[in-house]
Length: 333
Image (tube, rainbow, N blue to C red):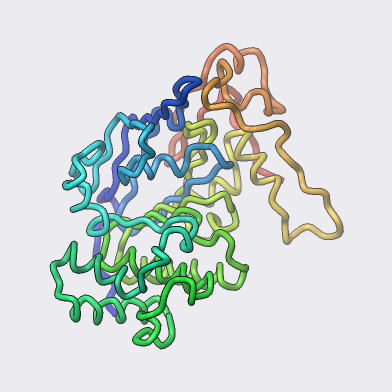
């Protein structure tokens, strides 16, 4: 298969000034605060952070899939078209056709009452206007492409008849049916064993090479990020606290939170028994964020300014930025 030609600088997704709030009886919860980034064609952007950091809610906002008590403001452009808070009919023309999402748990994302054939053909019949038989044939070919054996037989099965890894492959196949320019993968290997994880991640990279699509990879697993991402965004307390090319993040993190995440990972190059370091404390309450830097109560480097003033996300050059009052950090040992 010939790899398509595309401009590495051409953005598929542009997000600017994105804010996402959820109304609760106790008051508004600010899940995403003033987030901005872009993803180019053929690029994989990794988004990392602890649970509750806001990484998934960014893309639920992008896709127009917020819960009823959620509201988003700012700008989201897909291949130049503004889609944030667009009418449902307009969003439906974009979702599936130009951008697709793989959700965390395929067992709850696939309809247990419908066969895989029904769920896949509906996508093509809706977005591409194909007849049922043509849609079924295209669906079988896509299942084969994501390496599901005996696809012609298995397409008539129900989700519960597939293993976890095969269900994830079905989800990927459904997301790719219309040839989207952007694939959003939200924890695509959660609950899979390590062998199947590697297979799924290899598959995503192969599909990216074949199609030139952009990938937004949402995960808490820095090992996945190291192997797949081109650039990384680190989220904390609903904000971007650091962004950089992937190699720079691992070699020389510039935010104490990123440094803490890296030091909590096991290292294959260390000999003997070593104790993993942890980040003390708990993530902040998004309904009642502390003054100044949201990470200051857990930061070993915090000083007076950290409590008095929230640091802005500041460019460090060479594609790097961070939100921190400290001087630049050294390399991780």
